[in-house]
Length: 378
Image 1 (cartoon, rainbow, N blue to C red):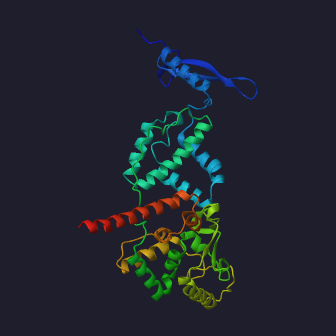
Image 2 (cartoon, helix red, strand yellow):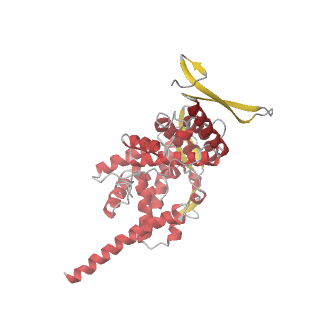
Image 3 (cartoon, rainbow, N blue to C red):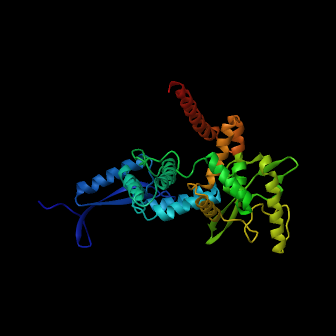
């Protein structure tokens, strides 16, 4: 028996049914057509659509793609709510990993956990575990928005499994006492490396150090005033230094200038003033404390390369700039500085972040104590 159809499109026969799916601004009914290979097929599509409308989805839900909503959310919702540096990172994640992915062209309501899982698995073949997890964080925030906006009925990430991330990077670690001695010796003999000693004795983030000016060094009260950060970003096609507030409100703080670096810090400041004189640039209290050869903001990438080369020359395992900050926190723990005080000095938003370092130090010291105790048995 031939199937019953009522419309012919591009030399193919279909069955079409029509339903009222809403009311427009003028009070007129909105009609939508559904096509199927048979009357039963077309009616099933219509019924499924109407059920989803009753559940709260917009009338256009069957046409909305992941990419169209994501781009709008990125520009109109996320961008105004985060710093320029954060937005640039998120936009890069979208452009390099999400936009060309399998999710991009899919209808938003069709995306299931298996689709997201396949997308993450594909990313893992090209990028690190950390990168995949960062991409997931962005997509997670996007789907939270979609749920709140009634664009989807269920979060497709609920059944997604993320790749396991190592607890600590091999290079993002605290330096050993011997490594600290090597680094400080290099900084003493070659002034260009003083910035690493300064980082080690202050615990400041890289962006915070590169944003410091002469005005932020208060020798009267013997403190470093931390209140801003700088990072090179691409803004409207131009790669430039962007000055911003510190990472969080807790990051605005005063750090004591330790006696060990007071003299070398004064010597460094004299060298900076001399550099300005040689460049015929007026030096003021707003001049950068650690400027480039041209007396401009230093680029973080170049600083990281310099640290990597220094480690190689000193025959040390490679470490990151953050390792110097981590080492500062570790020294505080070993010296018995109270956890709350250390958290304030580090500028952590949560004391729990500092506590993780303290717990690690406690575990190491406990292990050493057990080893000493075992000597009595041997």
